[in-house]
Amino acid sequence: MKLVICSRKDPASLNIASHLLTMGSFEKRSLGDYTFHVEKDFAIVEIDERLIYADRIDERLSKFFEFDEILFASRHSSKDGRKIFTAHVSGNVGESTYGGLPKSLAKPSPITMKNFVLALKKRMNRIPDFEFTLEATHHGPSEISKPSAFYEIGSSEEEWENGEAGEIVAEAIFEAIRDPRREWKIAVGVGGTHYVPRQTEIILETPFTFGHNFAKYTFENLDIEILKKAIELSEAEFLIYDDKSTNARVKSLFEKLSGIKILKAKDAKKLRLD
Figure (cartoon, one colour):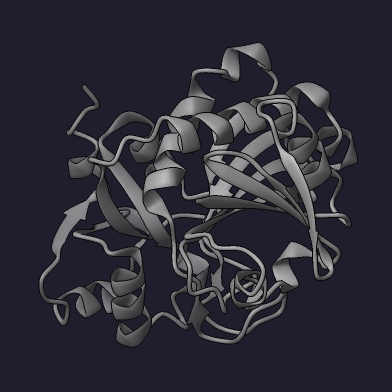
């Protein structure tokens, strides 16, 4: 059972949830301080706190309801005001400015995230002024032990409340949950800007998907312990790095890794989707 978590403080979250609720026959249950909407394959829960500060929400909700994965339906905020859909895993490579703990990573759900991305890709023609991008690992909650990822609408209130955008994200979540493919190749990504353009191309066009992604602005805090933890939590078989933006110190860390295949992004892009 997968659980979609939405925050009552987040207009994009409520937008996505309102459309999801039209896509099944949900039973409403009030359990503790939470309102659950339960369907055959998944459930939606409303919480009062902001999602980025919802550390250990899996432990708290597990007291009332059994589930094995979390999908955070969320807003994306940025000063550039881009009209975008984003997906990413949460955690902090360095300080914990926006939720979570320092140098702590949530457990990713790379398979569902890949299925979401491909379901979203099929619908992008309905809203041509939007684009999709992955984001690097950032913000809380980091203290999540069940597989999870964020699925977001950005970047301002106008987009958060856009009905078509909310419907498209809801449909993509619904398809990712209801019709999952599981044969994807899981990687940890290294390099690039916050919007990890090489990794975005790879998840859209190849059989690879990603757990954690580390942008170059995190490199001063990126060490072998964080890399090993990211690989373990992501259950990754590959590490894919953007050669031009990955410095020599970080590349030297790859030599200390075992049991994982190291690929340059340009080589990973050669393997195409069927």
